[in-house]
Length: 298
Image (cartoon, one colour):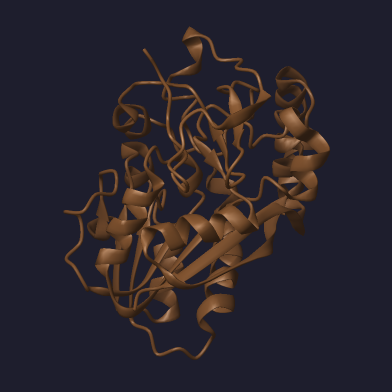
């Protein structure tokens, strides 16, 4: 059943203009499609832009249980984990500084816990994570598994006022109710705590260049943010001193090919060949069009 959704920032219904028509079909909703960092397949809902605040969102969407889809999703990006660690640690250090004195941190949607590995190695003494994918948790390092809760984030996962830092990397775009989830994260922070999210920037050069062919125009994404609307959604959830900025990614050339607007079959042939093996070994730092948002609990 199709469900029209309100803009989570300004709460308006229907006050929007259509940007892209829907391309979904009955095969668009599977655990494979809802797996992180899969090869883009150009399946997406209708995308509209709010005339009041400018937020880009999927509308209408199909009413379904996303918990089951994400629980059964696969974990297929292990070759990119080291680059992701560097990227996400760089964001956190930019926001909180290198000599910060923080010791407690939680993460929402952390895959196999690779960021929590880095946080633990960096000196955080109390770590915790929430991850819906069973396959991702099964691939976690043995010393990290006990700290991962197999679930979607909700208000019962963490005690209130427990952590100094919270992070969410490329999860906010997927949430059906981003304000509620951000409020749950806010509740878990101690007063003075910082929450940091990384998301796609729908106003970035790559999104503007590729438009509907951009990999961010995807059925997994319910909302897409800009520097402006990203700050607005944090403020709506109750965060203060909200900031945002862009960042560069550490990726292999193979992953860049993975994102190019060429046919899926051509990508698979190239990436499964000896050329793909070479491309996976070549690492680069590149501004793909992503951004971070941070806010403080007062």
